[in-house]
Length: 158
Image 1: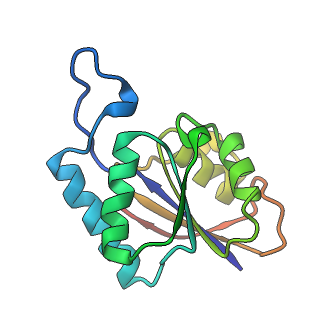
Image 2: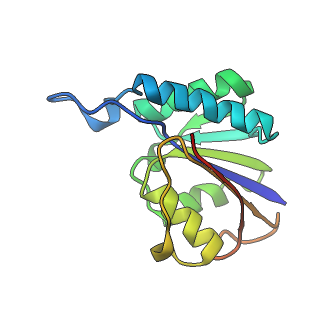
């Protein structure tokens, strides 16, 4: 079995005048949420083998707080994760078939739609994913990355 861990960035500050969305930092609440997410992953033995992370500041800060708790692993900033559709995310996941437990740190609505698509077979039935939320999907090692292929094994939020 392979596992896919999807982590939505924690709460971020509102953009200041003229500030690009990519540059929004975590809020103090968001930093605490990210650290709590790291503890939950560690306590549940869900330590990733590799991480793909959006290049936005809030996702990078979320990831750094998580890895500060879980320990460091191979990580790659992936431009395509920012503002990604479920199809884009599925392509990135499929390209990392060599990874047993992949963590993707990104944004809504792409992440919440991906959870619904991979577990329910449709992205129109998504239920939401709060800031700092984690969804864990399990699927057969040889399975094609396609709708309905995974089981949602855990869903957590701070």
